[in-house]
Image (cartoon, rainbow, N blue to C red; front, side, top):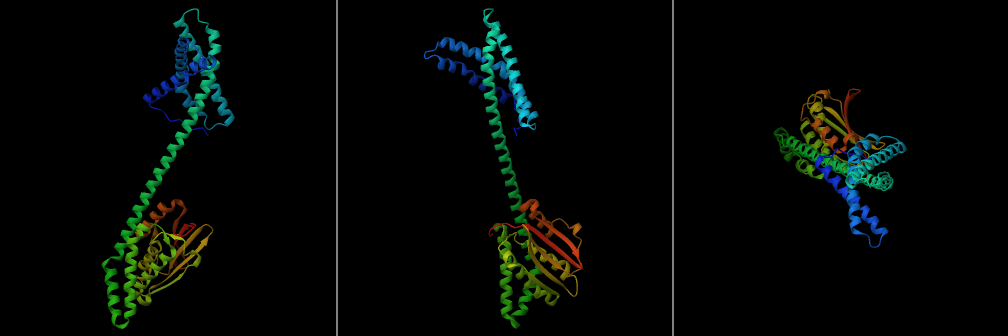
Length: 362
């Protein structure tokens, strides 16, 4: 498809028109040099000046109209498109030659052979007009493609900056939730209570909390991480919370081993688990069961978190909610290739992440 030529500013159009006219008119002395080893320079200069008149008359007619003809016909059938453009160029060249011949006749007087000069000049002018039109079409095509590529690169850079911003915000939000006094106090109290009766478990929990905080800090700089690393952090988080809720928190993780190297957005699964603890485990006296599952569906990977709690209103999530932020992150990372689904099924609330299966390791 031919490019849609963009409207040009008047000064730019004048400069381009003058340069092309002067260069096109050089064909006259070049032909003289080709046909005569020692041309008459005065006649060549005269021919060059007359050529400028023809170039201005023909170019002044073709140059402002051609972009609109090209744009109008760019969606037509190839044969019809170029036939229409050829007819336009042939007609415009003829009209330009007739007008230029009239100007030259006014300058040179009655001895100028108008129709004989028209027949001779039309053939040369038509060839030059076709060559210039082809050149400018190819030039405009490459220029438009370059501008489109630059625009796409700019859009990708904006998306990348947006993704980095959202990742940073998610990291800060996650770190803020980890550093929340209630979480820290509950974890510290749990560790303190275990120091005497189970020092090994207390030391392990302290290590898990350190790993969780370190991962929260590093996640904004690592981009995607292997799913196995995300699962480790999720297990650490669940073990820390289990020390707080004890038997009220029951969880089961079943992820196929062939998915563990899949690149995965950091803290995404942890956000789903944290949501279940908030809306299922902490709000009921008997607690809740949390099941983490994963499977491959064609080119997609589906990771879900289920709980048997009372559920929550997913249609009215406040701004800054973990799930809302996660949705924005998925959009920035994968555009429309990833999504998060929230639904209820058989007394369970299910939040599922569907992301593309990216080849290779994170």
